[in-house]
Image (cartoon, rainbow, N blue to C red):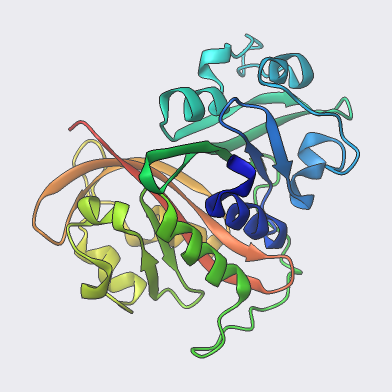
Length: 273
């Protein structure tokens, strides 16, 4: 079922175009796909690689915390994303199939489609020692009338998914957020269309967990767009409906292997205040 679902098809197509390492698993936690950008972390190409089953991730990649303690199965991102249906941020060491140990950072999130269908999970990972994607990527051929295929696929995918997603373009303008993000932002997308990054970011009045304002240049979406680096954070926002909410999320640059800088994607979820 999962491989035929439109959400899985769109996610896999999008992963093929993107320059960030992306890994997909099915609802049981078995490997479905990883893109070319993930090959240096995994340690081998996807084509011709052995199937990795749910209980084999620890044996294959030997994930450990910084102090060398093994990461328990229930703390691993794909287990949390598939079993608890929750997004999760992670940072730990793992050994690629090439035998090289790397410190990685990333997010895992459930691929929950329309009708609350559990279709698997997606991991977006990066090497902590080299978080930026190469600056040699071409400039995006972004025009108002001709958006890159990566942006089109991202918008289509977000519209199907039940997790809050927010997309901004390379110039910082709001391109789209899905219906699942409306409760967090306190508004519908058609009410905020094309608002510049600085304007809507300031309107949300982001504050750290201790209540201190977060400077614009330190906000996750701004970091992802301007510095081309992923950023994870817990913070408070004041929605456009005036309600204050505690959220956790990650923003990462949307960089196409051919199109270059497409913008940034944010995946956020609400927390208990």
